[in-house]
Length: 103
View 1 (cartoon, rainbow, N blue to C red):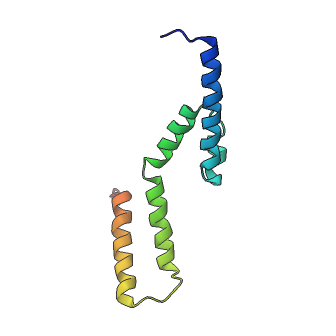
View 2: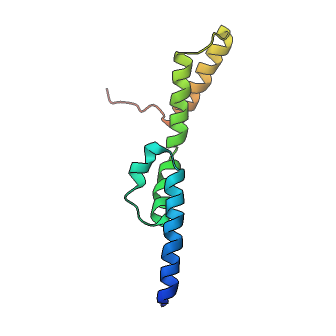
View 3: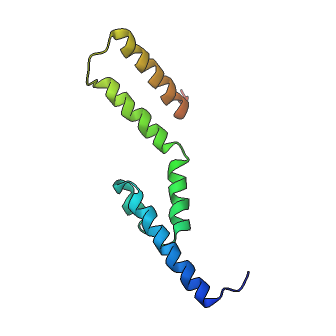
């Protein structure tokens, strides 16, 4: 481990605090409380990476699209409607494949 000059650490801490504030202020408001406990930008970044690299955002998008298909705002032709449903179920099953249950 290298020695840290006290002036350099103070400067690093100010920069880290600023970056951490920017990260926390640019995330969705629903996630702010979840990330508020982390004090360094590295901690905030690592936690945000965990949230967004496990397909949570993709799963949310698929569920949102499924809801839009169930309660469509406009009346598409039946073939378009069925095509959307087929594509969404395929995408949903790839994200969360059905698990066989014991008999």
